[in-house]
Image (cartoon, rainbow, N blue to C red):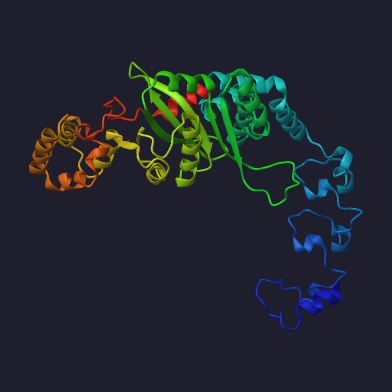
Length: 396
């Protein structure tokens, strides 16, 4: 050791440095192996009685009592025994493992599941407080979040497994609802021999609803789309008719990958086959001008009348003009039953605000004003009643 320290710290260069023991003439004497001990170095007073560094660091004599290792080992128990694999599990570790296991057992998940089932929107913080009071142990928010997710999966089912039984769902629909149309579209598979395919779209039109619509409903459909909630993104497209009491009549829905021209054209193709619609059909649609829907209708049904929801037009107007007067002017123009009356209200609107009038004039009146409707649908409805949310609740 003397040679190593002598090479590392040149004793001749270290002479005269302040702070060294004045009785030591040079570093060579200070680092002499016979005189260098733990007591001289004052190594936190861990070793006493002049024990040599070599002895102090000897593997056979270092023990936890000398090292003051959190007072975990006593009576000279050495590191090898203390960290023995058979004795390594501490009380705290066992307790936490027991708690993890208890959270994952059926009994405790059922307790969480009951709360999640009765109140799916229960905050994770509320569950955390309840569990901490019951178990009397600190519980991280992440652990509670995972427990709630496990309980939710039991309540609503596993999404992946539900997609795996999609074929069974379709067969059950067709068995219990005669003449039901259910179509599934999948992504192309490079390997034709593969037994599985990746889901892309599904279209469903229940047989009873289809018969009822064709038997007595007006040639009028509201089209809408809404986002899906859950781990798999997508869109729900819906078609809803109007019954004799001007009530909502759900007809068909589809789950697609996104709301675009391709998905809307596919949905309209399926819908047209169920309702016997053709390119020259004089049908009437009303929508919120969803993305991709306008070109899809113009391509599939060029002779159809397409109305725009007045509420959607007003919401776009509110981005620039927010007062109630603008809504009143818009409503007067839209509800006018004759063209002269419509033109009079439009002039009044131009006197009130020329820029707003110019903005509204860019939307063709045949899409939103009653005075310009064809009358084919025998309905003067101006609003699309957001059928997507209702239809999902009714059919899914």
